[in-house]
Image (cartoon, rainbow, N blue to C red; front, side, top):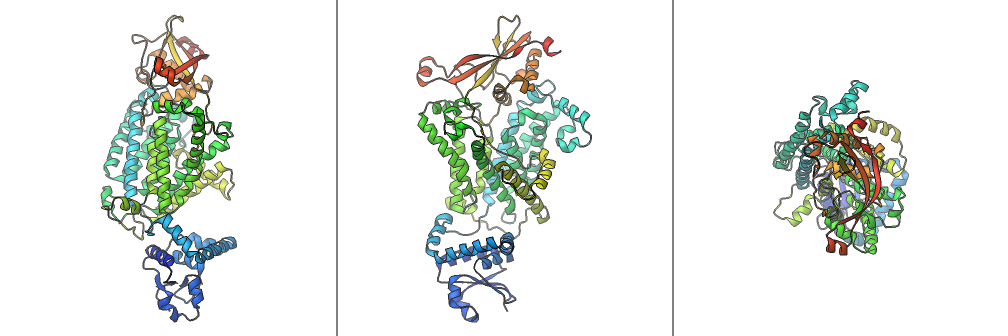
Length: 611
């Protein structure tokens, strides 16, 4: 009898030897390995032909297993991917497919050896993510910094007592309607104090915490506080923090908390605090969902502009805050836009599958997705979204790849036991996130799964925490660009416009770069123009604040045409904006042209709004 399970392989097969070295690293001291050329004589019950056809696993009780079952049992003995052996035993179809696949590889070892080299490179060791984690956590700290700093500049005008949507009024209404359940329905630190000082505490506190994370100090508690601070703002801001990158930041931030080592500084993590594999996979799964869901949503929406590949002939002009590079991109021929749409679908529907592929293909996916995000950054202002998406891509690049390009970086081997967090915490949380995210994805893809109703019920309970979210950017392409121009008057005859800082207004204002800052009011004005003012109650509140001359709200604008006293009347008119062409821009300096469409809402005064 063997003291340990013994896996016997063909020592003359280079392909086998390379994979055995990988398995040695996975199983450690739990399983012994030997070529049949050295030990085959001890096991006369196994023929030489059997040794040459497949690996043979001999367990300590003398039981012998071969082929795919031997592989799955070896991994199971080491506690790696036990679900493979479970599927093999429970489902005959999986068993049959596994053995067929094993035979296919065994009979074509030369081909699959070349394929392995192409996909993995020369190093088949299991991926480690010590450096990727450190880079990701610091990059996430940078994203948090931009998000909080941007909000710190706007929070009083958006949510303060004299802002557009005062959060204390909102919380007061929630309190009147709900009892103690309100704390679970709307988790936020703002319940502790409902005043403008809370906005300062949350935004400035978030800025300081993000700097601590960038510096690498106390990563785990800092990440939890950053997540809870941002959650507190999202849950009181309503329309102004309802964007997909806001919930993406919350979901990524929660996963990052479990990726972080419990040490005083990131450099102390060393090789003893490997990121839990399940949460590394969850980050990669989040990146897959973000991209694939966006591509799928475009097709599932039925929008003919995506179906016939004409969407990008409108996109650069009609997106919320284009850049001047977006203006030039709009001037390119239609065929270029058709080709770009094909490339975009490839990036969102095909490349994401490489996220779960071997090392080289996974790195290729990282290059493609990072390049894709950089192109988006050049043509449009999407605040911190692009930087956040790029940060997620860092977990597609393992330490072995970093070491190849930066040989001075020492390779840190992942420990056998995950020590960053106890298993009793990591596994339940990880499994919960996997089940709910898979259910959410299957619901979007309209693929029913067993138990989805029960999982959906649990998902709804935790929905206010935004732990798992739905994604699908630009599912329907806007083909026109209506813009709301707000004007004030004291006599209803002479009207003066309020200029916004960043949205289209003055025809000679060059579209600029403002990322990673997000002017929340300018963005909401873009959405408001796509619907009636009745569908945007916040817009009326905004106009009332202008009529009252609120300094906090006026600080969100570029100009105040009534510096001495607010106007008696306010009106909002809608124009349809278009980019000019190259000839017009060079000759007259106009970046935009517009056509009046009519009133957006009736003329207002404080007397009207007080009724």
